[in-house]
Image: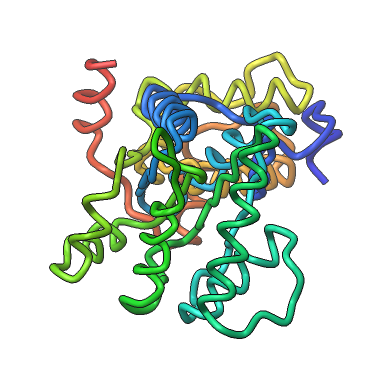
Amino acid sequence: MYETFYGLTCRPFSKTPDPRFLFLGKRHEEALARLEYAVLEKELVVLTGEVGCGKTTLSRALMDTLPADTHQVITVLNPRLTPAQFLRTLARRLGLEEGRFQKEDILEAIYGRLYDLYGRGMTPVVIIDEAQLVSGRGTFEEIRLLTNFQLDEENLVSVVLLGQPDLQRKLKQPAQKPLRQRIGMQYHLGPLLPGEVKPYIEHRLSVAGRQEPLFEDDAVEALYRYAAGVPRLINNLASNALLEGFIREVDSIHADIVANVARDFDLVPTSALVWEKEGSQK
């Protein structure tokens, strides 16, 4: 609706993790670098962050950096699996045939496939999204056992756990001590910094075909304060602000439009002092 009115070729604030719109703030750049290094070293890596901070988007960016001739990416989007279901899912994603019902048979088949891939210069990368939903000690134990698939000099598989902060709490439980000891790298992804919100907005608008400023400075501040720097919330507010701006037939988006949209979502702004203090530290 508003795309033509504002000179856009597509919607700049879509909820889908389109890699074209990837903006690497300081924290996101560091997180991606850590993920890339952990995969290179074939480690078990844990990335946590609040809802909407960009964990899944970073995982897609990670996939794009991995050469298809050296890495096979296996994604598990719904980790609410029993240990047996997890192993069968992994086996299917590795291209193994159905019909292996005993756990020992499945594990042997998985090891055989991993060793075969190693011989062909391929590294499987298992990415488990929403890992805080893993239900029960047993499935976590199967994830840990993936790190047992190794040769004397290196692992045969890299494992990436993505999850909300509750994943950290689960991993700190005494029963998960063996799994914690296998974690080679861990990082908690925070929201965008105040000084990153304006370039974030401008980057997404640029990808969508608009080079001229569209959000006034007070609107950018309002987006940060109502969304607390969380990219998904910024996108939702900005998208709705563009729709309201189109309805009002205004040339640019200002703070009162953002505030009006934020009220519809019952969002409360952070203090202006937070914006000024954190913005001065960028």
